[in-house]
Image (cartoon, rainbow, N blue to C red; front, side):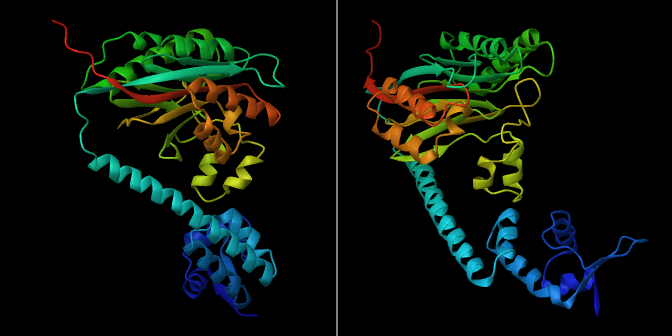
Amino acid sequence: MEWLTIGAFARACRLSPKALRLYDELELLRPARVDATTGYRYYTLAQLEQARLVAWLRRLGMPLARIRTVCALPPAAAADEIRAYWAQVEAETAVRRDLAGFLVDELTATPRKDTTVLELRYSAHSDPGRVRPANQDTAHAGARLLAIADGYGPAGAPASSAAVAALRFLDAADLPAGNVLNLLADAVHGATEAVRDVAGTDENGTTLTALLWTGSRIALVHIGDSRAYLLRGGALFRITHDHTVVQSLIDEGRLTAEEAVIHPQRALLLKALTTGTPDLKLHDAEPGDRYLLCSDGLSGVVPDATIRDLLTTATAPDTAVHSLVDAANTAGGPDNVSCVVADVVETAARPPAS
């Protein structure tokens, strides 16, 4: 048998030695022999066909977990799996195309006239679900502040409540035009200290996702696995990124979105309010926008497509939040579920005071 060193095998299959070492660790492409003394990997010519298939699939952008599935199938079934993957890619590309169009429109939009102003119309609803004995979520909706916090641990309910309570002064605060993100960051620092005061130990804590409305722009703070969505022009965009173990595996290509749904560690957080730095963002709002904040009690059991349909068909925020909570409970309600929905609407500008 002719043995190929890892370097020679890498050149033959057009995969880097670093990639080959990773695929060995993931049991996707194991070497035929490993030297017991040096640990050096050796491959055979017979492995080139599978290695080249892996290289081609990686060029398609296929995640490693799905490549493992393809490589284990006979040729006809593998071809069907590749077709299914590419159909999914095209569907996701269409969504990104819509997002690109939204960004282009936002950047080139004609400034609004001073004869109208924007304001929020909002509603919040929280429910313990069908399984949990108590509700550890906290939801808040006000004229300027929208917030969801999902507590965990024995003191999860006080933790989530403390986080949101520490932000509520923003509903009545005069917001500076230029540094609203700094104001929000300072408020979140206060919320973090408030949670530490009630949590006591690291086994207690909370996620936090909040939007601060300035009258024309939205400031977003996010940490954990609660989510914020934007419904614009009939398309639903998730505007937060989960800080979870499974999301990190998806980002690395080690797990598919489908596998993440049933992963045993899907609820394991990488960051929470007292254990990491939150994400901060700022962007313009448009009339007709509908925002959703929710705990993972909704997003964990109700698909995004259903969330989009319910948000699209509900005529008012109050109707929307109750429909979403009902959908989560219909799906089993395994967790507390909380939703905040807010619409950006145009109203006539008030005349200046005389």
